[in-house]
Image (cartoon, rainbow, N blue to C red; front, side, top):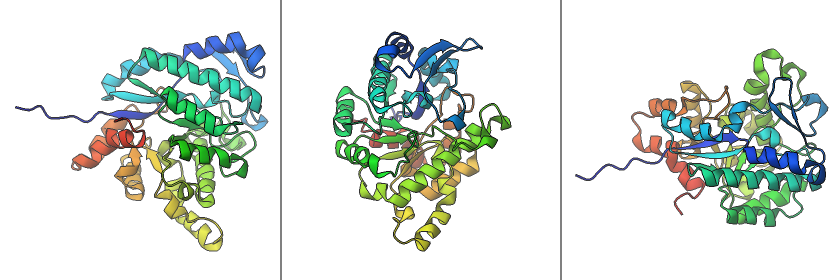
Length: 339
């Protein structure tokens, strides 16, 4: 009797900080990226500090789980995951560095990610993207040739939003190379009520969703997904606040018809499943459709969801094809994993 085929389960939202990057930072910071410093924080954790807007407070020490690349792989069995698409911790994506230093820093990050992935075949690398690269096409073409599945970007640079005309070359290059873009919040819009260390961790739970909402609303009203319909754009944390605010964005378009249609743009986007609640996941399914949602856990953070596959399997228990798409089929298609 022929054995039934079980589709591969792919977690599209995980992070690591390869120890190789810490070594590179210690060795090369003074020469290649002098605004980056490596030290040991009061709690004993490694601290890689780089410029941040003053309203965001100081750089944060690296969460120990990020350095545990072996642990990123070993946890998969218990969570029912076969492979993980992994990128750098967003704090270290380098979007706030001066452009010349950012070129060198992003290269160090991506070389380290490739080395970590070479040691663990279950890890599929997602490159750190340089939004203000002097040669975005050349950079992204090289990343694809090196084997990166896509590129992770922050929700803005230190002084530019994703819809800024100055970043237009990045979007055009990503579409031409056809390198999927994973948008992950980096900031929380500087609201002092959400400052790190205060307000019960709302910087993560509320702030990141708000930051994503602002960034992607601007992307939609600018018309970027419509301008590049074949470019996969994946939004972290279930799209933040965007799915819930889509009706209000539609009204913005009614009042300001010079903007792009946000509903049409929304239909082009993809989202991870990191929403925790069944009702929230059901709403995301209703708004985006099962062909546009990809399983994600946000491993290894305490506010990630180790039960993400359990939630997907429960909500889609009676919809086998939809469940298989969310758990892995969509990731294989979006990131062209069958090639």
